[in-house]
Length: 368
Image (cartoon, rainbow, N blue to C red; front, side):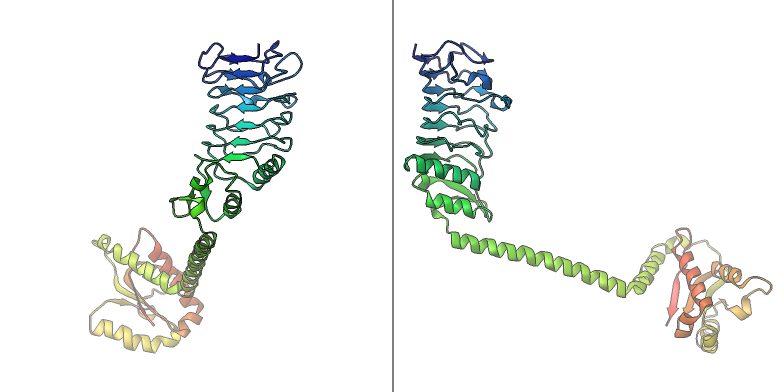
């Protein structure tokens, strides 16, 4: 028996190993049977498919990924000419699958789920058709391109490559693929109609792509992306630098805003003083005459100052804390003398701590 054509018969739905005895079989056509086939089935060793030339197993469930490391797929299949394993949901094909198929002329891997083509073609001297159509190839890497080039040279330029139906991408990283396809357009099946996804999202034929224009667009995109990134970095640095330079003013504004937002919660609180004035002893005359005098005489405010309202016999730090707590407003006379004074800075720290407390609210008027 030399020919077996059992397409669409579903006579066998599982081949769990090699089929022994069909040493004279030349053509085995068993497509469209939804049959699970293990790698060990594919052998032409003595006593098995010794004479096999055509093997058509399209639309089945070949389990090549289960091949063991010590087993050679298509062992001794030097007579095999036509191999069709299309539409078998293959996601990967062993690198050395064609190691012992030196007479192969047609290899059909279409309709699978290959994301790359990584098959050794170094032993192929007669390959005429390599069908990779309708997979999910986004391109061919350098190794695959070199492999195909070598196989084409060994077949005297008679090799035809089918890449149709793949989601090929023509982006800024695809210039090697683009140039290769343009240089080998005659080798590609219907090469003039082959399309790819362009950088603007449109489908474009390879023959209509201008490498120079595409490089210019990629250059513009790179410059724009770099410019945006640099601008963001400079903006962040500028904001941080400005914030650091103005940090005290920002702290004052933020605290003042918090006080304004909490003003509605202050109703019903009784204070002994309308305000507490803190100043350097070196600025006492100016503070009393210009601030204290006007607030008391002109507005009739009850203002707390150190030499008039501090109780004798207590620690000064305790008196300051108590006076601030009993005052509705805190008035700081900030001058160079104030900033150089340890006691004055201590009062400022007390005020800031009390003002920042979530449970207490002390509006502030600063005279600089």
